Structure formats: structure tokens, C-alpha cells
Length: 393
Image (cartoon, rainbow, N blue to C red):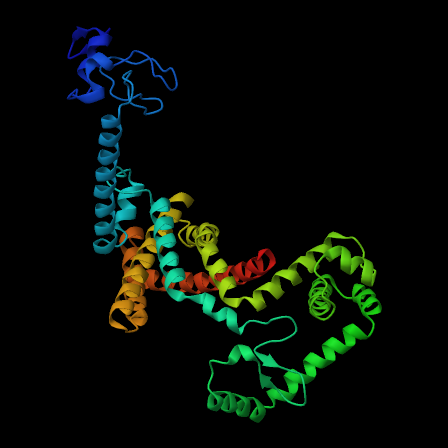
């Protein structure tokens, strides 16, 4: 029993009257309703259209083809509606969409993380397909050869540079010679190879005296050299030929050398592979950046997750601008990157002002500091991504 304005009302009657009116149709008709969820066995009322525990539809009717397509198009229209509202809020209300989302007004908008990740995949997919990076593979190294040959008395272009005109090749070589690069490149390459190949076993043993970081890089260089000169393709060949010890460090250096050699032979394919990893790099980058935003606004009422949502929304806007700019550049053969970067920087300032509700001076100071931190973290992430891509290529 419950009391409303002094009148005793049965609890079951009160529960039923408080439920929203539902128009029963299709597989949601009352005759198909059950008293127990088929998915989680949670007890249900006949008025429950969905299970309050797991959200599955309360229907005992077997799913027909018509039901399947009806639900598919219903969900699609619902998502499109959320998508349009999210796009409009992002473009027209900097920072306000985050304030609404944090305040609990979430039904009208798409999930910030899923939305941002989808935009990232779309942008990098467009970049990957339009970039035609595979054409760069012709400039990669083949065996001991490369785009620039170091054999003979002077540098020359390899056959991979055949698309360059003779005039362009001669001009490039003149520039290299004028800077003294020609002799430096040739001599450095010959010195490295001769030092390693003169006594590979002894040279590898001498590397153990260096610190870990220098030792690892020198071992990678050693393996790259013997791979090209001695046709070493497996670690057991290097182990048997040069008395290389079976350690995780040596195996990692060997694998890194193999990946680096493949990347040098196929630079275009390597770029495609690295671009494909960028959305996942952003997934790990933004949570770290949100930690600095939290520290910058530590006196505010927002928690870490609120700052992370703010980052997701702003990054989503950046990808929207990048996609728009990409399409404009492709259609009109112009470079609009500077304009859209300026738009984003202005947008970011407005978003910080609207969401955190601080004065202009404080916002500008924190804006400059956070942007500096952003570029530092982005540089570190790019370096880690490059190293990781080489290691796993």
C-alpha cells in the first residue's frame, strides 16, 4: 500500500499508472508479452515493452523477416536523428554539447567516444585510399641497392628513380655535392659496412659493452647490415653464423632490423600500415591529455571523465573539419588546411569558455598551456607510433 494525498492506493495499481502509455503493435502486441525476460529471466509486467534490467524487447513472438527489417530501419532512423543533432550541436554550440552530456542530457546525442572513433576511421580511410602511398614503394631499397647508389666513386641514382628526368637527377646530385653530403653518405655507408663485415662475430661481441639503449640500436644496425650483405633472414642463421646468443634482447633487435628493412624496401606500404594504426593511437593519447586538463581545472566540479568527454567532443570537431577540408581540397584542388586549423583554434577557445565558465584571461592562459602540452604529447605519441610500426611491420 502507498498513500497519495492521504488516499490509500494499492502499490501494484500505483506502479501500473505510473508507466508510460504504449501503443502495442507488431511483435510488441500485448498478446506476445511475457512475465519473464527471455534473456536475463528478470520478472516483468505485461505493460513492460522492454526489460528494465537488460533492455531486451519483451516479446515471445518468433522473429519474422518483416520484424527484422522493421527494427533495422527503426534503429537506423533513430541513429541518424542522433547523428544530426550531435553534428549540429558540435558545429553551432562549442562546449555546450559537453555541458549537456555531462548534465545527463544524453539520449539526443551519440556516444562521444564511438562518434569520435568513427570519424577518425573515416578520415584516415579517406587519407589512405586517396594517398596512393604504394607508389612510393618504387623508391624503396631492394637488397643492397637503394634510391641512391653508393657503389663506385660517387653517388648515383638507382633504377628506382627512373621517373626522375636526367636534369632533375643531375640537379639533385649537384645539390648533394655542393653540401658535401655525397661524400659523407658514401663514406659513412662504406665505413659502417666494412667495420661490421670485416669481423662480424667480434664486432657483435664488442657491442655488449655499451649501455642498453645504444647497444640495442647498434645491434639493430648490425643485423640490418648482415641481412643485406650475407642474406641472413632468420635469427637461427645469425645465431649460428656469428655466435649470437639466444636472448630476448638479441631476438628483439633482429626482429626490429627485419621490420626496418621491410619498411625501407616498401615505404608506401609502411605508411599505409602506420596510418591504419592512427585511430588506435588517438584512443590511448586522449585519455593521457585529459589527465592534464583535469589538473588544469582541478578546482572545478568536473571529474576526470567529464574532461575526457570534453576532449572527445573537441577531437570529433577537428575530424569533421579535416574531412570537410579534405573534400574541398580534392574537389577544387586548393589547400584549405590553414583556414580550417584557424577555425578549430577559435572553436577550442570558445568551447573552453562555454564549458568551464571562466574569464577570458584565465581561459587564454590555460588555452596556451594545454595546446603546448597537446603538441608535446602528440609528438611523443607519433614517435612511439613510428617505432611501434617499424617493430611490428
